[in-house]
Length: 251
Length: 239
Image (cartoon, rainbow over all chains, first blue to last red; front, side):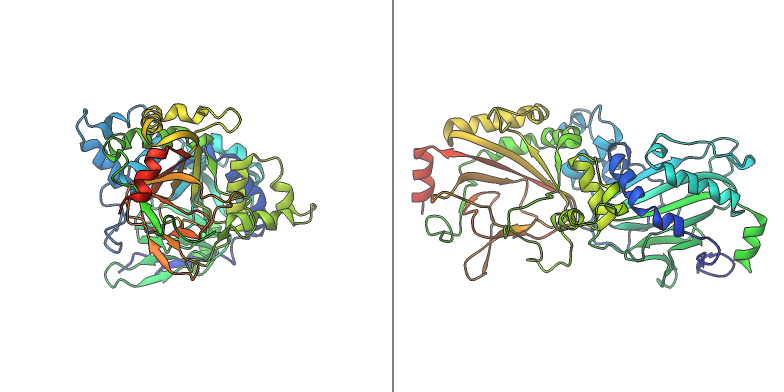
């Protein structure tokens, strides 16, 4: 059984959100990814307990966060531990990959992040350093407020996946630290459908593949993707939908 | 160039090379990979003609060098062309990957400066590895001309390729793998695969060789130079 949204596994937003401008920005987005690669977050080191659903994966695949947890258990005199000292997060990700064979081909660019008071303003606050690589995209994000899709925007980020990377199935924890009890509202955009992306019903194992470039789903439902031999990216914008937009998509 | 070396598909060098001390410095090497990553070379944008068979292992991919070629043939007024301008090498690699779907999961760390023939600035991140290599200099090599660490991300396909050689002799090098988990093979003239089962080997690099992906990152170290006569005689005459 999935929680879904309005009794559906996901909502296809393609008739409600015009992503043509986003699609047209593809070369500029890729330039931003390229210019900002050193400042992206490479891989997920810390993952909350129970967040990932790893039962469908071969045991030979060891996610990065598991090796990060293992590192914490090592004795301070262990050479693996010693050589991990004073590395920044990205260096530590690379270190754990090669030293302990960890898999994580994601990198993340957070353009906007949750900042106290974001729900109460239609101004975008919490703009992060990475935003400077994507100026045209930042303008488009702002336009989503003008278009009455969002009343306010709290976070926007890229999920960038190298070729062959596995999107481990997971349910999202409550992501707004200020109001963890409020369900997430977001739009999730993919520039193409090459990388299969799905919601999993954990009771029946059925996968509901999201066959649209722009969607909204219940991020407490288990979701993940199948690997492809091509790099890909997705973009997620979290905020508070306007009543008008909610009415449209729930109809 | 004929297949193999000394009548063998490859020479197993495991018994000649100090793997015990190399394994002891594995964490230090990985720390070096992490610290030097921003200055390493991401992917191969250009290759010599007929030196890589990108579909040799049967995967449907568009190699980075094909994306680079595609990019260079774009009209200069196209957005994709314009947005790829004024990027440094690694930035262009990322651009070609995400904009045109280029595939290449290799990162190359050149530890010898080709201009000075001395240790490069990247070698500073691998101090113990440099000491280990210098010890090879005493026993294995009379001269070391190049040292390259090649890192391959999880799920990365090791290109099936052959290295060009302008001379009539087989280049002398040792190829060291961190482990034998990732299958690595050499092809004979009929296309038959011989899997290299040793961690350290020497093979005829002008023959096609490549590997299969595994779900964990790996690295290997290649040291080029001239073998000492003593070493060469040992490895070629050993039965």
